[in-house]
Length: 374
Image (cartoon, one colour):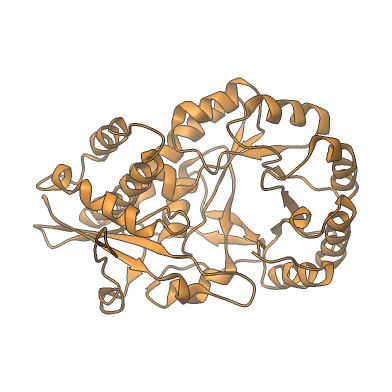
């Protein structure tokens, strides 16, 4: 079996706009083979760079033409070795991962088994997810609490909020956190993401509030590359620090581990890939560090890939879930993601990554190169 064609589709951000937050443009990748088997993947998308990422996928086409789809490790090694300079590295990584996920989908379909069967087999038959509550505009304590409570009502047993993004003072953020905890109750875990916007002088007050509300997740109080700052905050706060969603090289994750800068790594599935995520997790396991799979993408293809990786990672905790992307994701593809009573999703046993794509719908979204003068 050989790869015969590479196609990309850009799902416009307008499709996923909701009253709570902006839409997300998604880059889908389809690989075709001479055996008639097609594989679907998805590339990480950076803000307003979806066309350049789709273009990066097509730049990989010469490598893929006639390739055996089972040679996934060789493809990824070659693609990542080609990354040079800070300007295009993450775009190349995102493009390569979109292809990688599609390759796994083909392999699973060819062997009529889910991908996790080829990664050592599952460690669990269901996987916990947490609800992301990010919004792009300032939210009042009542608004944030109402949205978080809705996630809990839908069955999520953990919510991630950004209380210190809204308002002008630490007190404003604490008011948001107070409201969220009151709204979701004591049995739902509350995670706090700082989005790199914490000042050192505010740390004691913020830490006191997080401890008071039994917050068990302190994400990105500093950028992932500032391992010294993260290690210092981790020691001072005595809170579990989570970092890594913007990284794509294993060497960068290793720095987090060697500096004891994080209790949990959260590689993004569409930036690190199924293979990369499992390898990062194995490295983290040697340092007694857990992994939570970041998924800032669709609730079908991105989620399906995340579930395949999470299934085989012994030290995994949770997978990220954006409920506001559900309707738009399901408008062109589907993946079983019903929550059980514990806020978990049953592991799919369908071949490949387990996603069904409506090709007639995505055909209208085929990537078209943008010329320099447009």
